[in-house]
Amino acid sequence: MRGESGKLVADFYFCNEILRTMNLQSILNPIVEALQWTFKYILEPMSHWFNWVCIAGGFVGVYIWLRMQKRFSEKAQREGTTI
Image (cartoon, rainbow, N blue to C red; front, side):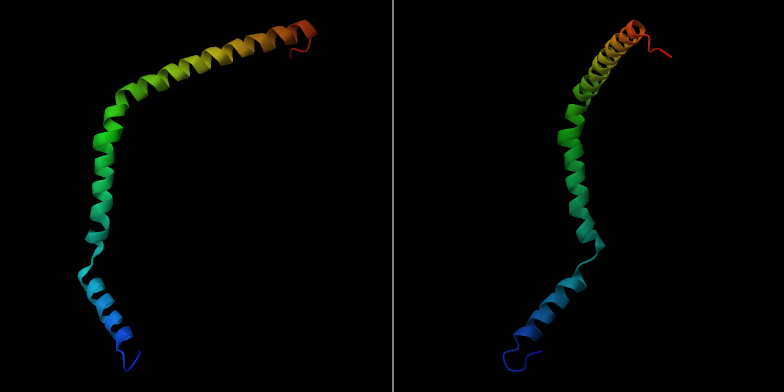
């Protein structure tokens, strides 16, 4: 603590006043509001088409994977390396 200027003492009382009036709700409410806004305006509107894009991507991935497996099996049978 500084004696003459009182600056440090004033800063301590200012911080003490803020901490006394602040509680967990004042921290959590803005986080909750941001998450609710994100779900309402970003995630819900894109959910329908995003689901269809993921399903289509899954089918494309399975098609590519099965095509590659077919090529690997044909190559293994040609070379006689099948188990």
